[in-house]
Length: 418
Image 1 (cartoon, rainbow, N blue to C red):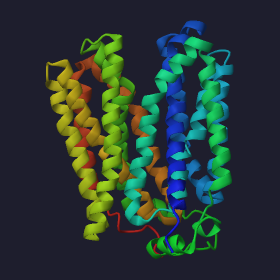
Image 2 (image 1 turned 60 degrees about the vertical axis):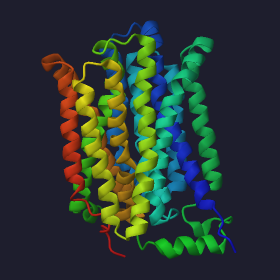
Image 3 (image 1 turned 90 degrees about the horizontal axis):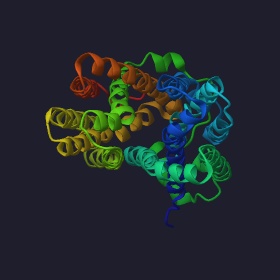
């Protein structure tokens, strides 16, 4: 009997969730000019509104991951997607600065659990040799979602006004939540469509699902793990560097490299598409090496370290060259290298966290998003004090530090022994 492929459907549903998270995040970026015009918001005010999401997202990573481990991914992910979709749509009902800040903060609170719970949702479904690929393809989905959303948002704004995109994308999230709750089950054993051959395949690789004696998350063991804290510091470096490109790269191209708005829109999207390729390749290569060598620690380490060092090697010429187009080309290499690390980074919580992968990944992602929240302010200070080159040189240094930190991460050492 050939194994069914229910686990692959679960994976693609998770990819869709990742796409929706980034779609909902970037809706507001394209709507900023229209919102500012209607309410008379200054750039500083709009910056505070955008930051409200970041802090809600960073501060609620751990509670979000706990939610998935405590109640199971089926119920938890359904609940938080409905939550953040509601506040995506409610953004359209904002009547001023305070209400918009509140809605965006609460939107961030909801999205905070997305990646940790989604990681937990795969922990009992995806084979160890498929985890890097699975995490790579899910994060690639998020980047593609971010890249494809602006044209849709602009069309909706032109046709129906700036409020319509928030409503449309909010409804999309609710529809996904309904499909997820109908199809997904917390373990393969609970899913009626999984045949015995697929069940044996999953069991043979990961072991049968265990009934927990307690639903309490073992925070003492998790927070005592040196492996975890090294992972967190590494992901802080990643989050800091990624934010440089997500938040400031278009402005850099316009203000420093001299591209007009149309050129800026085109060239700013290229590193994001290059990063998507990095997301896909990094996890797949790591799984392939792990399968061939049988050495999970080496497989995770070699790909992530290569990615960080490639990013640093791309940032330097991108920053120092005087040719604007060449700078974009090297920036594509840099973001490709940076994203090469992502599938590997998110596979590690599955490797070491087991049934508590949601909580482990939530701690890691908290630190990554703190880095991402600090980065925009730090970049503005560096630009004002030293010019546009300095923040990118700092990012290159952070990539080198990230590589050194990954050298110390052992993906073959579970936090809790079976």
